Image (tube, rainbow, N blue to C red; front, side, top):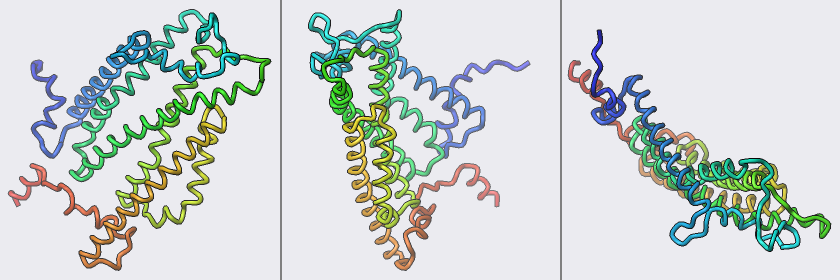
Length: 313
């Protein structure tokens, strides 16, 4: 009969803590995955509770979350929206709709505010399988990905009022806009998500260039097609199908693509100088992508098992 191990709960971090090379058994990986998922889910739940409370209460003198979400809708002219008793309100057409809506918004806001926590848990789970140089790239990627996602969401928030004014102005004075809370919030969250995720595309290009998969020369030869594809993507991705959000998204992506090309150009020049210093000036950047990231440039500290094998031999 097997005895229960009182220290079994600590096995999820045993391999990482006592094995610098990150070698772990399958069971240790499962414990590690359970631990990371538990911490990430706990962070989202705590953030959801905070977002649920913030929906109706002011935090540090800031407006409530409901006021922030209603801002674009309340920017509509009074004659184009429902204004009972001179107030700006959304419709509730189903029982408990506002409760489910508040929970949805709270979890979404909590996931965004506590994104550094669960992103770190994701990074901490995969980082032992990376070289030291790749770990640095992972930290940089997570940092700039968070900033770009937030920038895209902020741009969408400021574009949304113009989009609503444009879409609600077709009927003239014969109609007024009485949006339900569920449809309006869902549309707004979808727009924020699309803008935030779209802002990650230029960052992906930069990381592919750093990995030697895409060179600046290729991007330069593709730039017309890429710009056209970005406008097509913006036209298809924006849920409102209005020109303001489409042009704002396409214009921002084109600017970010230009910045990404400049970064790729600087990185390729750095690679070219390194190849010239190593006496490989005639080798193309595409052919030398593996040379630039060869194991000698990375953290290749031999694992204990490899070192023991070398000692035996």
